[in-house]
Amino acid sequence: MSVDIRSVITGSGSALPKQCVTNAELAQRVDTSDEWIIERTGIRQRYLASDDETTSTLAIDAARAAIEDAGIEAASIDLIVLATATPDNTFPATATKVQHALGCNGGVAFDVAAVCSGFLYALTTADAMLRTGMAKRALVIGAETFSRILDWEDRTTCVLFGDGAGAVVLEARNASESEAGILASRLHADGAQHDLLYVDGGPSTTKTVGHLRMKGREVFRHAVVNLADVLGEVIAEAGVSVAEIDWVVPHQANKRILDATAKKLGISDSKVVITVDQHANTSAASVPLAFDAARRDGRIKPGQLVMFEAMGGGFTWGASLVRL
Ligand code: ACO
Picture (cartoon, rainbow, N blue to C red):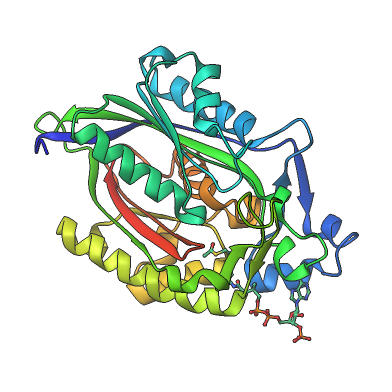
């Protein structure tokens, strides 16, 4: 592997469905309350896709915003890695639809399935491909329509999720030219924990799409431990101190998980980007959605050190430290 290539984030974008549903509105069709949802999760509202909005339409909108932000021609993108657990179709990959809509046909385009950790898996895969010279300019997208796989009769899960998409442009740069880029990443999976968070259907089993099932308390417990561990690994690999990190952009599952993880790691709450109140849990989209929100409102600035982290079904989990 070439040692002097680094993958640099040069743009970001995001997209949300047009329909915003507050907790109070949800409580009219589900046996729940605004108070319960806020107290247990920090969620106040979520965006839900209408029939004319799909994972690919959200991904395309987020990708276009990221391309504009980076100031590049869409045709120059030679790699698209799209993280989703809710693709438009079983095949082909939703990434190929995005590629065609953007007009960069001919390069590499594929999906990765790592549920809520999907963006971390996609980012790390694209980074490895850029550093080995397989591509020069990548789009890394997290896009989901979890509303399509929720059991709306199950109040323990349906109140937690939302739809959306986020994207970044990742470019191969000579490491000697700037300090920006992905500095260290770690990914993990533990298939033994399948039954704690999964979808009870699929083309090869029930031949249906199925619904999300989760043992929330146990997921919570594993999430805090696994995230603190992987953050420690990335910090050690990059040779930085916790104090040097400017921002943590975590997967937005639940404010209590975010608070507990930050506390375990000794990172101040004021350095944690939180959008779960606005977007709920958007699975693979949540990290790039939160990142784009914090870049666009001016919190995250060029030169800063940003940690991405996520954990999801599988279990899968990972973290990545990036200099902007
Ligand atoms: N509205 C009102 N009451 C509810 C609701 C609801 N939507 N859902 C559950 N309850 C009730 C339960 O029935 C139960 O009632 P009971 O005591 O009479 O039996 C009570 O609330 C407590 O239920 P618990 O499941 O024990 O509540 P808990 O405090 O564990 O909170 C939650 C549930 C929010 C799911 C929590 O376990 C959690 O956040 N887990 C993490 C899961 C997560 O975020 N997963 C996302 C995917 S994985 C990832 O992204 C990391």
